[in-house]
Length: 143
Image 1 (tube, rainbow, N blue to C red):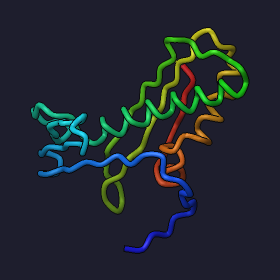
Image 2 (tube, one colour):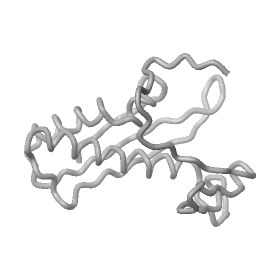
Image 3 (cartoon, rainbow, N blue to C red):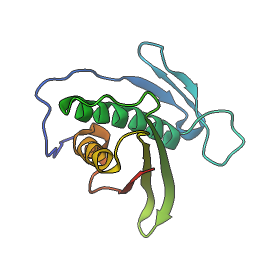
Image 4 (spheres, rainbow, N blue to C red):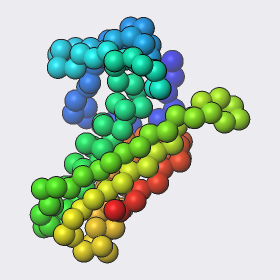
């Protein structure tokens, strides 16, 4: 399979590896056994999580890290209660299934204009934001 990547990685920092069976109603385990989860389709009574929740959790964590990097460049200390509530929608449209996302960012105690600047910079540098840019609708709200 050939890739047409726009940006090529020069140095790999980490590789997350999982083994998944059964698709949306299966199981997934990481190669280091730190992640070992049951999967369930969204909206079902299954006891597991789903790919949309996993994407939301990963993107939120990465986005907070990117905000931290942006804040560090400006010598700003992030509030301990910095939070990102991410919503990933799975839906259908012409052509099949699609995703869309909303990241609701809370930076309590930081001036609104400065917070907007940090969030903008984070969205430019976060690898999840880069991966989805131009591929899905993404709205970032400062709450």
